[in-house]
Length: 104
Image (cartoon, rainbow, N blue to C red; front, top):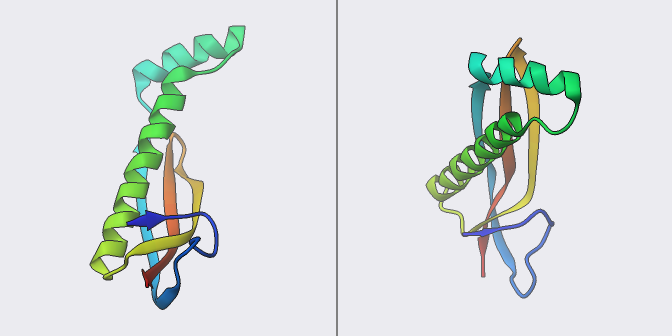
């Protein structure tokens, strides 16, 4: 599966557009992480626990998008984008989406 943030894939021709492939995950913060993050907020610096949580969430959303593309019969996903939104206080959604395509 070829994944790209661009509209095309070098040296490949798009033979068919299959639709939008998407994958998402909703994650809530952890009370233990919140306590540490609150302390970190006082002294400043990166909140590594949240960085790791977001990185894991992005990877899971991407894997789900790739699986959705496979279910559509795609060889690739182009124009990939990631977005996030707050679902409720303390919980956010990470959404990965792109155009599922067949390549020649």
